[in-house]
Amino acid sequence: MAYEGDSLDANLAAAAGHNPDLVRELRMAFLESAEHHVDLLGRARCDGNWQVAAMRLKGLAASFHADGLLALAEEAVETVPGDPAVLRRLRQMLDDLTVNP
Image (cartoon, rainbow, N blue to C red):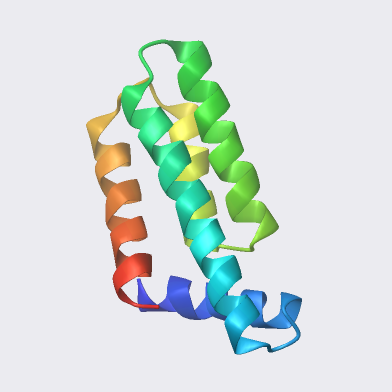
């Protein structure tokens, strides 16, 4: 998912005025929030909790123009709570974004 990371970094740089320290701080905040929402998805046991977590993840992805994450969050909105395939792909994307800053 190098492209997702590149796209995210470009959007963060534009928002931060190309300040490298601020870009790193925004990236870390984005990843922490995304990981929190994916964790909530993983623990959701009912449609309501799943939908809330998926919609919040979708909103986060949209606000940072993280198109790949947005697509996966939209897929989560449309699937059933605990869908292992969606959770696996979400976790993999976050791992890729964390490893490839």
